[in-house]
Length: 393
Ligand SMILES: Cc1cc2nc3c(=O)[nH]c(=O)nc-3n(C[C@H](O)[C@H](O)[C@H](O)COP(=O)(O)OP(=O)(O)OC[C@H]3O[C@@H](n4cnc5c(N)ncnc54)[C@H](O)[C@@H]3O)c2cc1C
Image 1: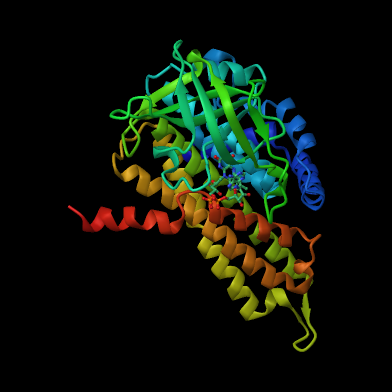
Image 2: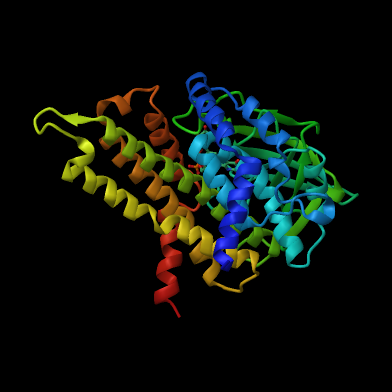
């Protein structure tokens, strides 16, 4: 057998172990209900926990299955094809654990406790996005006030915290300006039980509704000294933690939208087989203009999983792309989310007016795909990096 045959056999085995077909059918049925009722995916979460899905990145030395980013990306594509909101939210936990897994692989074991706690049932979430913070990882509007024991008190607003009803640990960042000449960006974790945390109950959005990515308000929330992960200069300063966050974030978010795109193609094809032209007396699956539309969408989709496979494997194999990494990572995520929106639109056209009904899976996929417009960096924010890579010395 070739390497790639072995790899595909392993992916099939992991799919069967963690996301068998019958479970995906249940997830897909529930996704419609969660979306209609604007409900969080509690039942999906229980099923995922039971199968060990929340421990995927826990290494075998810590009694976990020790999956690679490449393997998790494939599973997340599969999950997103059934339940995009569930996949996007659980992505945040997977990303936090994936970050520590990646740091470990690069010789930094300072956050191994995250993997141990994930193994023991804690749920990690990602509290980085803030209103009007286009620095994203490189700056913060959250105030971090240093305490004598080395801990911090954090005050600020984190928006779109997926998993808001259930997370127990939240990775956050804030700015420590106690030394005006040497401000520090503090990264670390806070616990759900800490005083000063309020989770907003305002959540009524267009897509990915099951993720319940509600705002989190921090009012003097204590980050224990042992939970401080980094104190780095604000701005574009190379650091293993932020590199690991960017890599896992971009590639796992891309995996979700790749799964949405794949499912849209399947639904588009199913719809065409069911529809008939009264005028021409043929199935629309035989009508050239519809075949072409679906073919174009399929062509559009093909590079998306290929890009994900290549970059996740490079990442797992510790490839050193240097300044070429951000170009790869961001383009994988932007392409996947663009293609998800385009294939969802093509599939809607294939389905005709029935797909426009709110209870139709395609209508939900179209709305879910739209969330891809809002993950950072947007295309507008990313363009300067791509231009500079070619034009600036
Ligand atoms: C479905 C989905 C899930 C996401 N999950 C995560 C996640 O888990 N972790 C994460 O860090 N980022 C997450 N993001 C955030 C995302 O990646 C972007 O960073 C964010 O959408 C960018 O928003 P903006 O700059 O356009 O914010 P803005 O336009 O400034 O705000 C967007 C929304 O945030 C809310 N908001 C703004 N200001 C306040 C305030 N002061 N108080 C309370 N609420 C306010 C409002 O609902 C507002 O409509 C998610 C985004 C989406 C669409």
